[in-house]
Length: 260
Ligand code: MLT
Image (tube, rainbow, N blue to C red; front, side, top):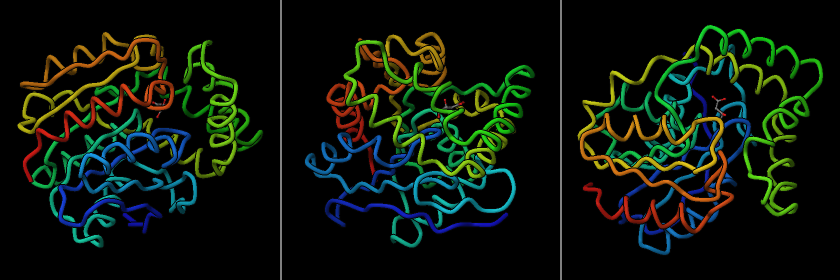
């Protein structure tokens, strides 16, 4: 498996507990801007990468599996001198967080699962991933933004916010996005991992999330011993952008419960 160097920001005191924020598909580090600032202001060190196939990151060879993405994140933390860290994953970033639990559970000090799900793709969803990958190769990232933008934000979101998210989606390299779709298709079932989690966990979900709905979040929160569920009212899938302060508050409260 190739391991890539990820472009990333690293803010806050080096002496503070490190947190890693993992974005979703087809997005980049910028979705976490408000939460990063709030966590740094609350005294944490925060690393935010662009994951392979997204933003300014390279794409690597072949399908961008969740295991490969987790390997990249471990390399980033190794190089930053970070051994144990709390990880917050949004949607696809959550799938990568599950892989970190699989590959290096001793390094995960806490888990924030934001608008994500533990179950793998159904056969139907797997077939759709292949079709979407083909469309993105032919038509570019517009095929993704047209399909996904309506699910990311509620109809009440400001046009400026919608335009910002669309710009990030359209900047996703088409071949990278196609490889990520194939990687997500092949991800493993993370449900068996949940009951073994022994670190502070918060599950955050937008009340209107049509992609990873509140029921799926509730099931995850019930499966992880001691997990807290935060339902963010008035947000669709991309709750960290649509309701930045509420999600930041949930993450700061969670981060304060972590032990290095
Ligand atoms: C995401 O927001 O990362 C994607 O919706 C995840 C997925 O397509 O499964």
